[in-house]
Amino acid sequence: MAEANSMLSLEALTFQSARAALEHGCAAIAAGETVFDLGGVRSADSSGVALMLAWLRKAQAKGQRLTFINVPENLTTIARLYGVDELLASA
Image (cartoon, rainbow, N blue to C red; front, side):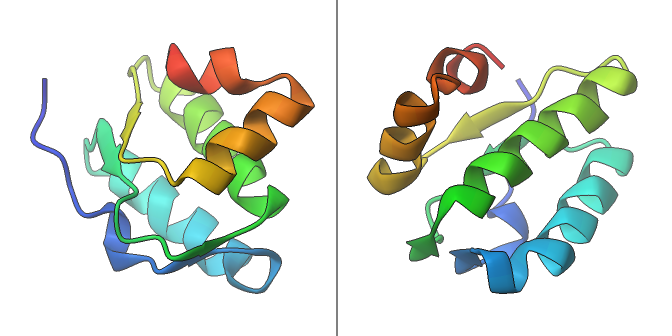
């Protein structure tokens, strides 16, 4: 497994930060990152789940497997509510 990055030093995965976070995550995937450590994320909303799914699609399009670690509990709860928690867990 690749060494985990600090997921772009992002503190928020929210509607307000979504565009920058998407670009930053896609750049990390393009650079070969396969493990996103979300431990530094202090604020997240449903946009965070959408970002995680978009990053998964980007990685899959490159034939990579993306893994998320230290996912904040509120993102896990939102993903479960939307029924996509298994998609994110099996990434």
